[in-house]
Image 1 (cartoon, rainbow, N blue to C red):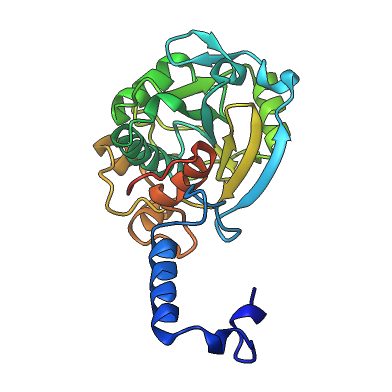
Image 2: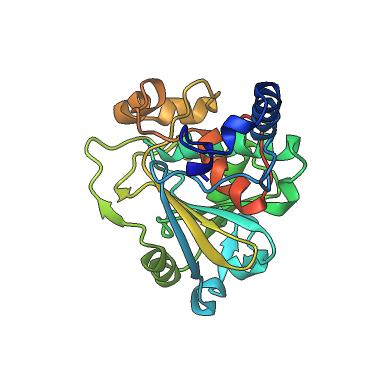
Length: 266
């Protein structure tokens, strides 16, 4: 193909210049409009995260998880939907509220694109001892989380199995000086250190993409209780996010790729 357009091609000199100009113009229009291809969203760049294609085994997909209303569900319950799964805890004073705020922005874009029913946003705790359904429900009310945004807990053993499979790190740690619980207004006795991850599961139950790193939620309206609860590091991540931090729109790129549909700004 490259040689056909080279200067040494004996055929090119026989084509009238005006026809060459017309052909180049048409080619430019086709490229600009996505002609000659499917027009579908491309695979997210490696700078954003890692592409995978591994089926989530039934031993993980069918593990019982509990919603903020006390209902039992599982990852398998959303077979046929694209799942965006993240690890979090409601008492995280740093990145978790920022992830949740980006989830809210993502949901707004999904609704505007008419695909909210095809995507399930999921936050699964790394703090099952404190994140009861009642506490998760209080957190849901703070963010106004819609039906396609699940807040989940489970037994400590189940939580360990799920996050061991996906590779999310978490570890209980001291909390000196103690923070004040945004819900009960009592001092906390411990914190949970954890990685910051987004895991994307396609409608067929295959894990397809992983984003790791802190969220970029600057410009998003944080619920007052959460804004007050953020510690100094959380405030820094909110007001001066790192250059590598992912935005809501970037977090939608794997969803767009899986759905095969361009999504608007998040």
